[in-house]
Image 1 (tube, one colour):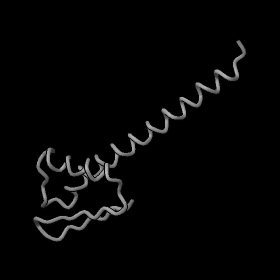
Image 2 (cartoon, one colour; image 1 turned 135 degrees about the horizontal axis):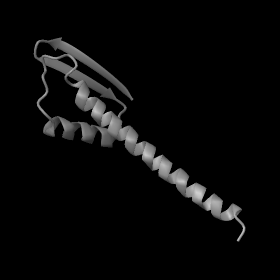
Image 3 (tube, helix red, strand yellow; image 1 turned 90 degrees about the vertical axis):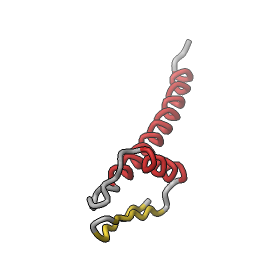
Image 4 (tube, helix red, strand yellow; image 1 turned 120 degrees about the vertical axis):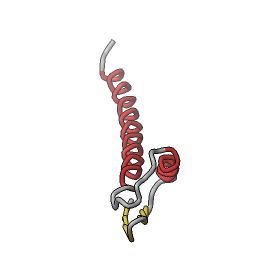
Amino acid sequence: MGFFTRWTGPNASRVLCIDTPQKLREDLWAALQTSEPIEFRDPFGMLRPLLDAILESCNSHTWKIANQVREVEKVSLEVSVPM
């Protein structure tokens, strides 16, 4: 994933997101519609909703993998412990 920001004047900022998963795009769009108003005069104004969406995506993927690893650990414990 790549993220590029451009601040072009007193009331304009743009964010270009490349190779982002569909879920992240949906989360970012939802955050932009429901979050507090963005101050476009601030060159970093768009970064808050963008970083929130990225963190949510990373958190979701981390827990998905952690849960799968935990299931494998449970099975290996059952196999290695003699009854």
